Length: 141
Image 1 (cartoon, rainbow, N blue to C red):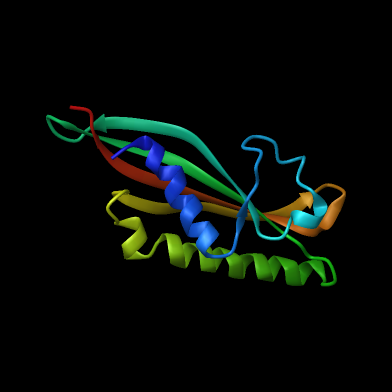
Image 2: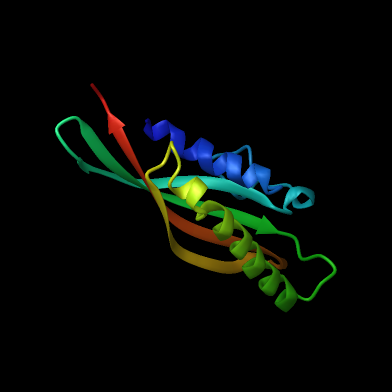
């Protein structure tokens, strides 16, 4: 197992659900407005490690999904409700036993979830931010 396997797992699951990854790994401000619908970025933040046994180490990586949704043509209150439905869809997939306890990852647990306007000047679109903690076992021998 490898720390490098966490992002591809999240990517594969989101792509299978019909989401598209933003090609800029660090900058959210350059998303083309016409491509905002179900566009996501994976942020990997803090990673901590500990000894699991004499040859295996457990690492916990904080993963943040930032998903944008278009609200053009609907009231922004409906967009907020839709964002929570999308959150349910992502949670159901990532937290299913086959994914969260799969061969690559030891476990995935949910964290904070927020729905916010896409920007201060754009409340017709929104950002769904979902936090997770992914655990993985690594053997470096």
